[in-house]
Amino acid sequence: MLAADPTSPRRSRAFTLLEVLSVVIVLGILAAIAVPQFVGVTDEARTTALQSSLAGARSSIASFRSTAVINGSDPYPTLTQLTTDGVVFKFDMPANPFTGAAAIQSVGSLEAASRTVSNPTSYGWNYYVDNNATPPTAVFYANSTDPTTAGNGAGGLATANEL
Image 1 (tube, helix red, strand yellow):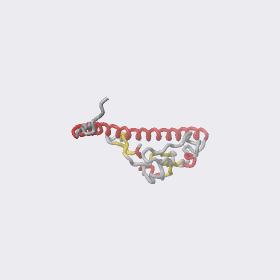
Image 2 (image 1 turned 30 degrees about the horizontal axis):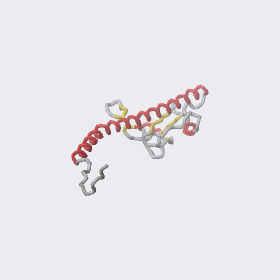
Image 3 (image 1 turned 120 degrees about the vertical axis):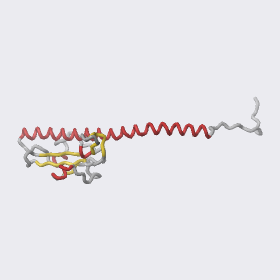
Image 4 (image 1 turned 90 degrees about the vertical axis):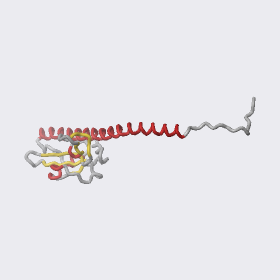
């Protein structure tokens, strides 16, 4: 067996600057193509989650209304009934995907009509109810003005509080 000669120069095996730059450029091109695709998926997922949460809440309120009308009581739940476990919702109200807040706050008729947003870091949802109006009225909407990927019917995109 021959021993390595400690005095002979060793040839190091490394990447050249050109090879490293080529790899960086290729990775940059791939990232420029892939990242925008994933950003759109995240926005679409938040919009879909918001629509699903709103549909579930509104369906629960409609179910409560059906039972209340049959029983002869006020058709829409009060905020207390809405936020009491098991009265209206058979599940915990999920957090608003745009604000991260799950609490529901009461709003007035003018705020509900214009879909006003207030305290979005504390409350994810807004609820207005007037069982004394003719006809009785209830409005449940998201407490956020963030843009969604859902159409607004006029060729643009709706904000979360418009859904």
